[in-house]
Length: 334
Image (cartoon, rainbow, N blue to C red; front, side, top):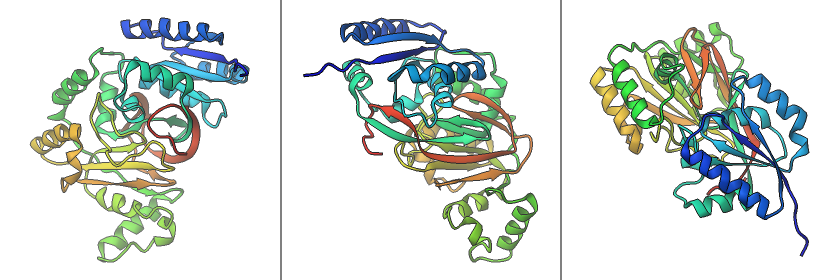
């Protein structure tokens, strides 16, 4: 039987923790036992520097293994989009929400097997303006939370998210969120909203939304001030909050979940219900699927993706099916 030799790029976030250090030893030992060559790469805080390294060196490797959390996956996804080289990952960062969707409940032995020999699947990526995301992008409250916490990293992401949520929930004021079909002008969007308010029938911009059958419901939901809009590839964010139970990583689309602004007590109740996914039943919540993308026309609303700060709206949200080759996981269909 012919031995398959590989050359692996081992990508590591420079922030150290005990789990990451132990996994680094375990993975390198497994690679050496198989006589697979490997090279370490420590990610930079500058995305452009990371992209330059991958552009110059990625074709020298057969596989990429990432040791880190959602932020490290975010970096690598922005370096490997549309590459034919497969990536696998060990979740060992401060936030590991994407792994909850991709691997589910899995032992360390099964995880290592997935990383080394798992079947390769093609998954979708989302994009906010020029930045890809692999897990969840947020517009509104969660973006504001991240903006307020810049420079503060926690080793207890769930507790940190809840603490910051409780600190800022009282004073957060929902904002108007104007959503439109991609490439539609602001005036066109306003005209569409006016036409809908005059009729109980379908939007008269059906031709603009015909490839997005669930976009009309999102536009209607956004006629009230918005608390939070999540665009999801994975199901979880914020340290285990099931923001989008209807998301499917291997699907050629993204899920959305929009929560309208409401009373402080209702916000708190629905945020707590997100842990189980029960929030989707609330009347202030609208959820659906996006197959191509949409535009956010409102200005000045904070945005984040995969726990990384993206700045303020406006933004164009785009779906990229089959954009990343990912090894292992519970989704084995492309």
